[in-house]
Image (cartoon, helix red, strand yellow):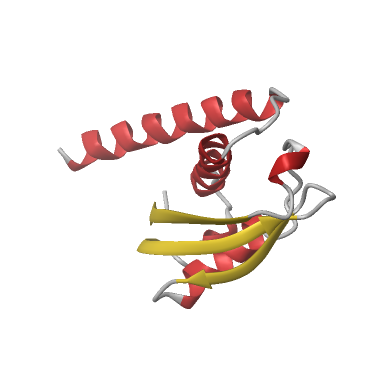
Amino acid sequence: MKTLKTISLSLILAALATIATANSTVKTVISNADDLRKVLKEKVEFNLSETENILYKNGVDKMQENVEILFFITPEHRIRVISINSENEVASEFMKQLLNKEQLNVNDEMTNVMFKIDFKLNYRAG
């Protein structure tokens, strides 16, 4: 039964990675907060599905954490993280490394606007 769960989880992660890769090649313009949330969620999920992601490189093999990120998008269309609220310092550092200064394809109306997004990190090394 454990083997079946492991195989199922592997297939799901592979499917998510494929979807995230396909979506990242499409250069749609992010025009609202929902689109922004979706793009960032896909980026986090894709990174967590990679074999040697940031958490793995830092020796983390399991994490379940809620993370709240406050940020804005610069006029150069880059994320500038203001604060990260989490009980786990590794989770905060992971999100900061992954998202800070990330280039986005956003409408100019979304620049210099503060955003707050909550993430639920569920990670288990494969």
